[in-house]
Amino acid sequence: MKIRQWLILLSGILIVWTLASLGIDNSIILPTPYEVLTQMTEQMQDIKLYESLAMTFFRVLFSVLISSVIAFFLAFLSNRFKTFAQYFEPILLFLRSIPNVTFVILLLFWVSREISIYIVSFLLLFPIFYQNLFEAIQDISQSWKDIFQIYPQSWFKKIQMVYLPLLRPAMASSWITCSSLGFKVVVMAEIMTSVSLGIGANMQYDRLNVNLAGVMAWTIWLLICVCIFNKLLKKVLERLFG
Image (cartoon, rainbow, N blue to C red; front, side, top):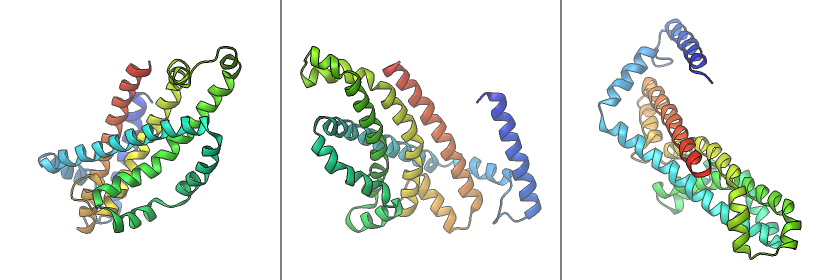
């Protein structure tokens, strides 16, 4: 989307938001853009803002990285051993079927709040990475099947010379998709676990204090954080896979 289109969209949102908030005339139900902007200005003067953004940013990055690495190895394992893939399929179905909030509640009985955030994030992101990579690996295996039969190579050589270069688009696409989703699940887990630091933790604090302007301010910081993360990620992926 071009800058002009973004400006038109944001202007439309601000106009509708301002008119709605003035019509309701109740900051508890819907604060004005000015009240939210004031809240954001106050937050910028507090070191807690930067610590919270950095912590959420780190949690997302770590969760996406771990999920992609484990999915990468298990996808290759499933492609190499069909029996493993058959037994692993019900596990994936289980992970996709259970609501994330259920995982959060259960994990809070077994592990600390901080660890539960990483586990929940992994349980959501891993199936996406795995499915994308597994399908890509299967397509490569099918396309190169005849060549592998004519020119037999070790499994390590196949991975190094064929699979890794051809998997770059699938890996890049999965990272971009899961990065935005990662912020959603991490912030949700921060809210549910009531950790001391993070965007979700501050949203929960302002919610309990009936400060909707604060909640909306943190939502805007979240959107900014997602945009910056995606921009940086795309630049890194262009350097690695471009």
